[in-house]
Amino acid sequence: MTHSINTQGHGESHRTMKNSEIFFGKDIISLDQFNRKSIEFLFQQTIKIKKIFMKKGRHDGRPYRPLDGKIIALLFFEPSTRTFSSNSAAVKRLGGQTIEHQNPMQNSSVVKGETIEDTIMMIEQYSDAVVIRHPLVGTAEKVAEVANIPVINAGDGIGEHPTQALLDMFTIYEKYGHLDNIKGLMVGDLLNGRTVHSLIKGLSIFKNITLYLLSPKQLRLSNKDLEEAKKRKIKLVEIKSFDEIPANCHFWYWTRVQKERFADKNEYEKLKLSFILTKKLVDMKAGKNTLLMHPLPRVGEIETTVDSDPRAVYLTTEPKNGMYVRMALLKLILEK
Image (cartoon, rainbow, N blue to C red; front, side):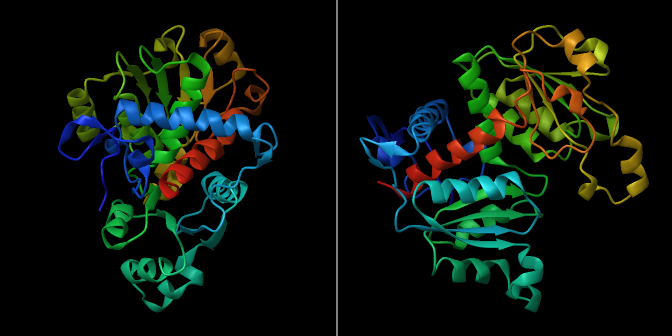
């Protein structure tokens, strides 16, 4: 079962847990598990690991291999480039090894009718943790309920993608040194974008957050998510055009319209390029320090002319930070 990741023991309001206890052995299913202290602690560890590996992976003169002898299973029932590759790289850079299944729907016993529960119970016989992506919302949590090893959600349909949100938050944190008093813009498929859902949850943990939302009306954030945001006391402002983008946002978060979530492909074609990020728009509306972000892949919604802008981090810092955040998370989960 999933446990909250916080800095206090169960029922012990006066005992601060040791740092090694905060994450050790925990599942990572949702940003709902985190509080401010656990996120800040994770980011402190990420900074340490990033510094080590900018020095060629050596700590105190020796190779840094905290996952030596550990095996992590990567089960990706949906396609992935960055999340799969960065998790694989994270494990191997820390000295561990991986069991890798891309597209188990076609190349595992799932084809023969094996249930997801049975698959996980087999995989845990060979590994110390599992990272899973699946098209159905709730699958990661379902798997965590039967698994006896830590489970990390790498995306469950249109549900959540917690480690993507953590790497995006770390990228913002690294740039500004804080996550309070942040103003951001989120554009694109806000209805189906699991990275959007997780990022909103994550940022809501911090103070005085305002997010401006721009999407086709068919792909606006669901009423359920809007109501949940109100309860979390995060300010969401829906806008209708580029003209309403406020000045000096800390970040712009562009997303693709998700073709795989559409039953009607003609509808997808109508909506897919509703809001395109151009160099002209950046020059007109972005602040001099605004981070230009995207969880990727992009399918035309960011012009390649934006790539060379020094504020654009979606092909460089953002995905690289994904590896470092996942390295820190895996180390904390698997090493006491």
